Image (cartoon, rainbow, N blue to C red; front, side, top):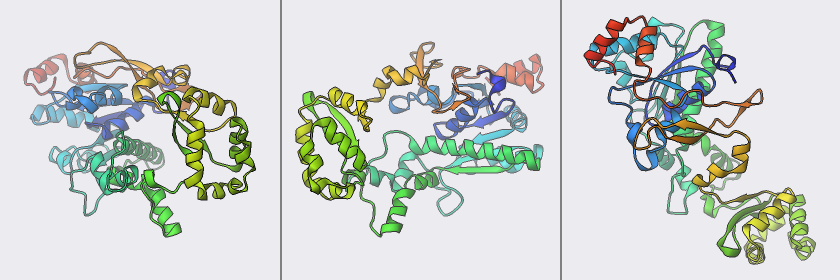
Length: 397
């Protein structure tokens, strides 16, 4: 898909972001065709050099973007940043409250220069008693009920990925696009706020509603009362594991036919889904014993052939070889910009959607620090001599 045909072509986004939440917002807008300019400190976004669980942050969430490195603490650098930000359709930021105002880069200041500006704040909490707290994905998962629901009783456990950071950035992008649509009618921009805590509460809203409807608090997922009898991970032959489900009466009958369990199909104790749920304490151990005679691959073949829900238990690194992801274009190559593997090619995941039958691909690799500084400064009207002067003063890199 050509850039000019993408839905956000012609939209300029300037992001003052780091870590995951703000960069996710910019990545979504960039994948959809916006020109996204990442403003970094002259020493670079620190996620470029994180180890361990953070090693994938920068190359994952900063594709399709340009990089300009600016020292906001220098008067010359700050002037560049303000000129750049005031040229934008959208500014996105995820710094602590007050940081952007200190530099005159908050919505109040920039909207006086550009009344059409859409300004997206990515914060820990929306305005209220908690707004000045420092938030992390872990923090809001703990206080927002998600860690309680994921872990075993008495053992809260955060989800295995940055769910709130990623979804918070997605909601920031949704808010930005909604504000751009409204700008068509009003001619004016507006301020958008997306927050980690409120995102987390939205995620657990189904469990809150369960309590409101039933009067019974939701149990942590390992101890939940399942709505379906067959809906679990089974340990099977040769040490394998597989998730199997039968979530309707028709699926139960198909399951029994497929596995040759005529006795279970005919047993009145298992006639309806609710009967089977009530019988789970005895039914599941019986099924575990019977299914243990099969390999995971054999069960997967049976369930796929009969249209029953199943899933192999996969690790993230195994997904690079997933036949469906590869056949549908769900992975794309990027060149790594930093670290020991700088210049090497890696596979990255794309937005999980198609437009006009096509995936939103990688048009630009994750940028090197300051890779687009000269180009962007020239676009703001700086001469080559002025650019060199700014570099000489270490105001930009």
